[in-house]
Length: 335
Image (cartoon, rainbow, N blue to C red; front, side, top):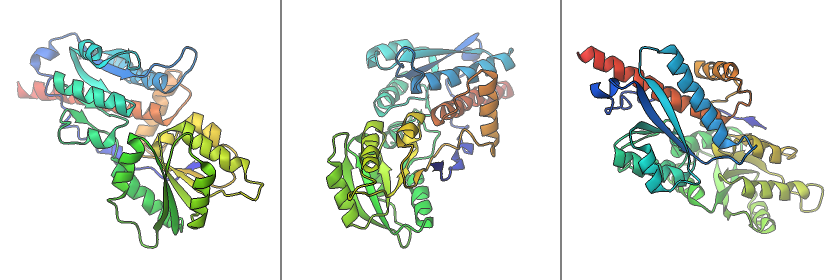
């Protein structure tokens, strides 16, 4: 299992847009700038996605506060989005200069509404791609590349693997349907055909799905899913039949939403190739400066479990910090 490639779009962060118009001179007279991070809380004793995002966001903010004693300090307010309704979140987020790193489609849609009501930016949504890029979502500032850009890169890479008959499995939820809608607008590379497409859910009839893929001559499957339960069930079915007459193990190609340690454990031992095509650069590599900065800060703070969510949270928080610095410089220059 490996990351096939990364998209270095995070270098293009549209910082002029994020100069945070709300940061006018009166704001800079404050001693603290409040930022809200509303993410699903993890169960006690479990260091999951929510904890990873919170730890790294706090690390970036602490690093800013320590390095910039003459600038207003940033205070991070963390709210459990699982137990907080929209009305309460709106009240709690009042006075914030920004919302950061919403992690689920439901949360991102709610926080986009709150950002518009409070007239503050929602920076770096990690889900809800199509809705977050709608012109009506004018207080949302995506940092990651779009699903369409990711799919274009994915199809190019798949074509380079000499795959001719591609199968596509679409999660039967908002994420799967929205990514599939983007896929339908993209011209396929020469020689590549989508030979079969099936909707999937946790309780899918995997035998029937397999039969349709096999009959279409599919040798690689692009999985448009963000649901670990569904994809784990599929992989387990194929793993369990690998030494039987029902054996079928096409190459598996995943997008970024499944590039998580808990899913990597489930897919371990799959006999064919299992690739992850990610929009976030690898958190373990060191080719780019942003990767080295992330790793150095994580090591300094004792955060040793590098992963994509943590790295994306680092990038989003870094965009916020950079925007704050640029806003202060712009205000000083205008005086």
